Length: 460
Ligand SMILES: *[C@@H]1O[C@H](CO)[C@@H](O)[C@H](O)[C@H]1NC(C)=O
Ligand SMILES: *[C@@H]1O[C@H](CO)[C@@H](O)[C@H](O)[C@H]1NC(C)=O
Ligand SMILES: *[C@@H]1O[C@H](CO)[C@@H](O)[C@H](O)[C@H]1NC(C)=O
Ligand SMILES: *[C@@H]1O[C@H](CO)[C@@H](O)[C@H](O)[C@H]1NC(C)=O
Ligand SMILES: *[C@@H]1O[C@H](CO)[C@@H](O)[C@H](O)[C@H]1NC(C)=O
Ligand SMILES: *[C@@H]1O[C@H](CO)[C@@H](O)[C@H](O)[C@H]1NC(C)=O
Ligand SMILES: *[C@@H]1O[C@H](CO)[C@@H](O)[C@H](O)[C@H]1NC(C)=O
Image (cartoon, rainbow, N blue to C red; front, side, top):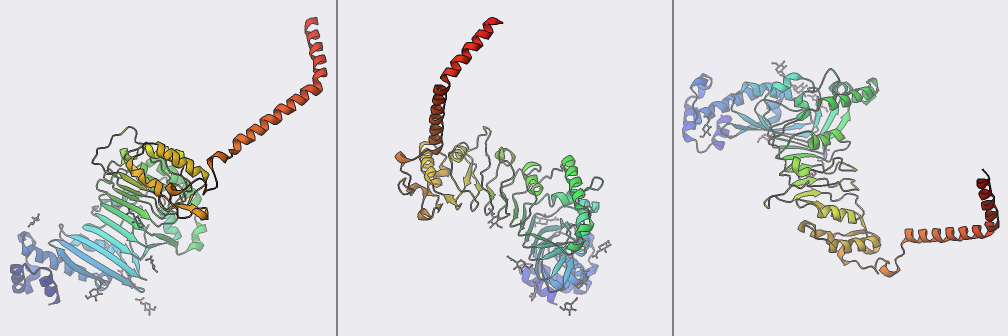
């Protein structure tokens, strides 16, 4: 009876359908599928169909709640506590059995529990997947399983928050691409039809680190690099608007550079690499707009970037309606604003590089740079530069660049000593004096020598 109450709650408007249900209560399974029509009867059959199948999953049905959110849409919410666990393969078997037009949204939150979920979590009819706080086992076990490529790639949204991947050494070793055994396209690209792929705060742990030395990872990695250099699988993310890999430690360069250089993601609007401990932006951002024509935001905030990447527009003109794309380099380790940076910023119209909240050192040079800035015609997006705040030295901490005066920084322009020039002058004067002294001292000898050389030459 409980089932019907839920149904009533979800479909208060489907009075007719409900009446039908009640009268056919005992004949649920007798309604032939062929006679299904697109009305509330159909809804009802989806409902029982899905519920019955779901009930058969021992652990899933115990740990998860399933509800119908729309005609053919089902929401599954799981909380995995203590030492319980669920297996993705079981879920995959389940989705195979229900009618083809059903869609599932799956949300799994762990409170200590473990889930056995092999990347890329591919199951027919799975529309979105959200995983939070879980320890994931078997993550790489399907990396070379060719069958995964044949499962329909239905995921539209994938998000993992704060998960810990627990690897076995052998699982890791086996999952590395080798010359004669590549990982599948599914494993390499993940959900290619997705609109968003978000992985936030992922950690990786080995459950048997003591076995790590049993495998020759050095050779495996070398082979793998070689293999990928040859193969270069291009993933086609035709829908992708948001791609995020953030708050991760030990992110490999190839993971990041792939989306920048190899894959196709023409509709990408947000690219997020925030908080990964990256010391540079890794990729050249030249030609950025050519690869990502509608890019709105590239987030490199909270890293350790010291140098701003090269950005060029290659003569590309941008429609007035195109939003200015933001390259967010806030909270990194940029310590100075230089003329070079201002030149760089002045050359492109379609991006704004945001360097606020960096630990700027306000020395005498900054005054000159500010003067240079005011002499340039800058895109409007850079009006903010004057409002950047100093982090050092302490007497001007928190002050805006525009408010600084030369006296305050102990560098009155007239008395500024240009050290390289002074050194050059001293060296020159010293050299001249030495030459003079030497000349005077050896004057006579030189005369004699010159004389004898001339003589010799004449004689021969
Ligand atoms: C069922 O009807 C809805 C509108 O009521 C329509 O959008 C949907 O495509 C139909 N589905 C099928 C399988 O005919
Ligand atoms: C499922 O629903 C029951 C009753 O509403 C609730 O107590 C339980 O916490 C829910 N479980 C999950 C995983 O949401
Ligand atoms: C879960 O752990 C508790 C002790 O922490 C144990 O008593 C119980 O048997 C375990 N349950 C299962 C299903 O392993
Ligand atoms: C169900 O959970 C129990 C206890 O965690 C576990 O031993 C068992 O393997 C699980 N079964 C499946 C099919 O996941
Ligand atoms: C899923 O189905 C396959 C093939 O039917 C079977 O081998 C496997 O054991 C099933 N997995 C689970 C967890 O039930
Ligand atoms: C991440 O997950 C762990 C459990 O795996 C939990 O203890 C921790 O509080 C979580 N951190 C955040 C920031 O949610
Ligand atoms: C990027 O990720 C960080 C950390 O997960 C998040 O706080 C930030 O809002 C994201 N930025 C964008 C533009 O989505």
